[in-house]
Length: 363
Image 1 (tube, rainbow, N blue to C red):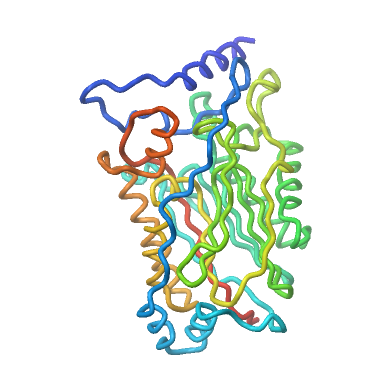
Image 2 (spheres, rainbow, N blue to C red; image 1 turned 135 degrees about the vertical axis):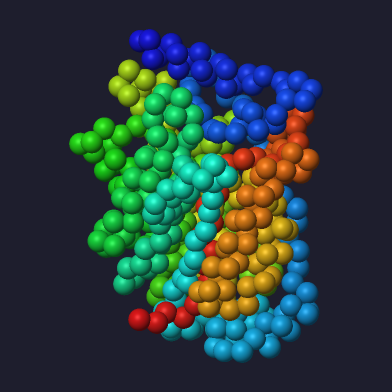
């Protein structure tokens, strides 16, 4: 009962962030970490999802540079840019993926092993029928209650990765991966507490279709010809309170916000050889608008892993630098202003980037 009342008090403090006085360090902004979200005494607020600066069109010079790119991969990318390949293409597709990221405490020298950047986690898994990616963003507010937020996101992603490698999934149903993984966490014999957002992306090799499930404010972009042709939709209960999977202590059940995996936004669509897929946590999207991301992606000319890795790192580094710029009008700051908060600056956060190119499958 004592935890319950402290949770309720914490909810009020998070919902009513204090204003900043002159000269106060903006690194102490209330959105520096997401809190566990509480239902008690909360009024539902509807906010509009944000779509940052319009996508820039690919210039003839860039298209020509793609045409001039040597090698099979460059030709495939160029053909996709100039109008796509035949729909009767019988070849299997696959994803060539590289990852990069930074924990929010990177400057303090705090790093974690494996596919984890701070409280973020991710995985890249291959099966004979599909390639599967996932990212999750652990809710940082659990740290105030002695809970390591990365344990929940990391365990969720490792569980989903194992399900894929064991073939316990259907490519057209990424929500099923999320649901089964979450259920395993609920039945875990080792106590686990926490919350996280999650995004799962599945490429069905033979049908050339991408199937996605996104819960919360992590997400993905699909870029073709220098323009965003598909993107995930953010799911927010109210400002800076994304949909999330949670496991709460028994005395806090019904108080801590927990969404169902089935609430994830699902999409399915065809992809082409050369399509670029960027899957990331909100640490990227809150600090870099689309036009900045597209500028970086223009440097990517083929499906060579080293080139993809270099571009993924360039994107993550730029987002990390902008996150600590107090004068920068970040997408998150703009979104905050749209919701009545007069603020500027980047949003210090963990950043995870998975950058993929659709290529012809090879064993």
